[in-house]
Length: 242
Image (cartoon, rainbow, N blue to C red):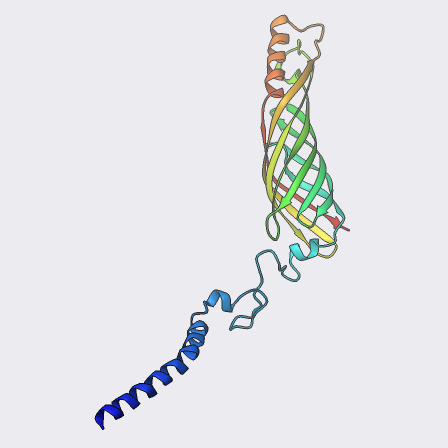
C-alpha cells in the first residue's frame, strides 16, 4: 500500500515538474532583462524622459537646434587681438556645409603703438570650422598676414632715418571658440588661436641717409618677423545668419 502511494506521489511530482519547467524558463527570461535593454531607444525612463541613441536628439532652442537649416552668416568682429598684442577688428562670414560644419573667411586689421613706434597689421583667412556639441568649435585653415611700419622713431636726432618696412607671410591658422546661435542673430568668442607662417617676404626701403649697418639691421628684423608665429586672443563677433 505504501509503495503504491509513493509511486503515485512520484508520478504527480514528475507531472507537476514537467508542467512548471516552461513557465519557469519564461519567468527567468523576463527577470533577466537588463535595465539597459528595458530602456532602449524609443522608450521612456521612469522620470518620463525619452531615451534616444547618441546624436539622434537636439535640445529645443539650443544653438545646435537653431543651426539646422542655416545657409550662411555674416558678422562684424568688434574687438579682439589678432595678432596679440595688437588691438584688431574686422568682418567675417561663412557658408554652412552642414549644421555642424562651416567654411568661413575673415578680414581683420589692427595696429600696435609703443613709445612712438607704430605698426599696422592686416590678416585674411579662410578656415574650416567644426562644431563639437552645442556651441563649441575648433577651426583650421590658411591665413595671409601683412605688417607695415616706419623706422623714423629709432633715431631721435636731426639725422632721423625715415624708412618703411613691409612684411607679408602665408601660413596655417588654428583656433577654438564658442559660437551661439538664435533664430536670426549669432555671436561668438574666438577664445584663442595661433598662426604659424610657412613662407614670407619683406621689403625695406632705403632712404638716402641710411647707413649699411642700419639697412642690414632692418632687413634682419623684417626677415625675422616674416617667420614669426603669433597668438590670437578674445576675438568677439556679432552678426546675423540666414
